[in-house]
Image 1: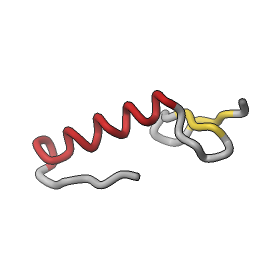
Image 2 (image 1 turned 90 degrees about the horizontal axis):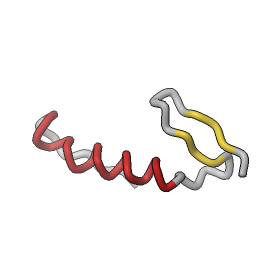
Image 3 (image 1 turned 90 degrees about the vertical axis):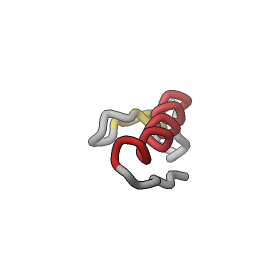
Length: 44
């Protein structure tokens, strides 16, 4: 499965479907955005 790394270090498949690790990272960022940054982050 061809992959590449984004600027933030998240490795995704070249067909643009997030890897399982990317999904975990995005959920963690979404969960922590309100208490840390004071705003809710919406991610797909």
